[in-house]
Length: 426
Picture (cartoon, rainbow, N blue to C red):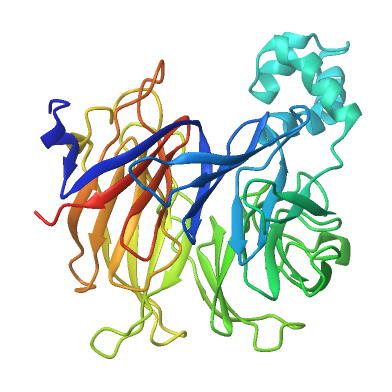
């Protein structure tokens, strides 16, 4: 497959572009796009997209130091929330195992282990041991979320920094009343749901928590899994429900009609045999043929030859006691010239609003795929767009997408780039 315009796009064309640092999430409201960046010092960029052919930066929040990143963002009215999460958390957390690893190796070897021996046990390089030790001793205390007043889009004003625990918060949801935060909390294993009241946005107040059985280790619960395999990725509100993706434990549906007491209504886990974790799940706004239909997406990680890439699922969730997979949608490696290039190829995330049967899904080096699930038994791709890699990047890494009220699509790359797209109607 060549890299011609025809091969890289079908039924979609680019109408605007900004060469922005890599983004983790994009949301669009009232002529502005809000982009959370993957890596410090870049925090959040507000882009004026009122002229989509000529987007321009209205404001850019920069971070102090490199301890945190704020790669997720939500906006409702004049309030903006960003996560605050430890930068390079998966790597740095390996430092927590150093004391136990040192002791174990010393007992086996009859001497203190060398850095190379520690590195082999932890799956890092010998040169990393000093950094991991320093990070462990320094600790991390800023995780949580920040609240901004964005009445003036050119001058976002931080009004609260709510600290949580551990490496902080990851993806989350919010509305005019509450923030639904996925975060670590003291006494729990892995991220749980913590709901905060935003009535006074300068002082977010915890309302309630929800976790899976086995996570509350301080209360004596014992997990049936190893490490952080099962945890909340994030929960999205739909009416009086929260649709929660819980990584290698599939997904849950929560009742929040009493916001102080979230309770589990439904549970569905398809891991194993499917290797990639559940990233997002949402129901369609309208029933199809009397059925309530939900779409889930798994996130591609380090791919091993011979095993499945992450893909989209379509479920019948009409009966919470009998959730059934109806179909799946995947993208062939032949459909991207960068499928075998360095970087990920596979599903990541879809636009977190399913107001029509069109699912706008980012596929890392497979770009943006628009999938029609109006026949839930036979999803059909109606359009796609694969941006070419920028600068020294070996492949595009389409990471997140939003769609405005006019149908324009806003696509961000994990490494570099921001594109504004429109359907061509071909």
